[in-house]
Length: 90
Image (tube, rainbow, N blue to C red; front, side, top):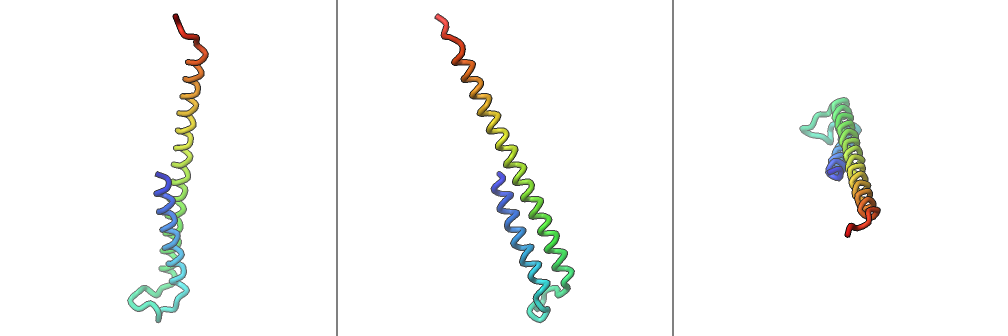
């Protein structure tokens, strides 16, 4: 699950970098595209913020998955320990 968020964050960061580079390109190379640098800067900022949010969600979901795995392993180890400590009944 967290891998999907990492991929989404990487894609958004890539497009944010492209948008940031578009504000540096002169308007003559951008026929039909908005030539306003502040628009490209705003789009780049919003995409970068979205990428950071997706990365944070990915990290948090990865941490929660790890906690779930470890608690389940601990529960199973305790259950096995209890089974081993009781002698078999005859």
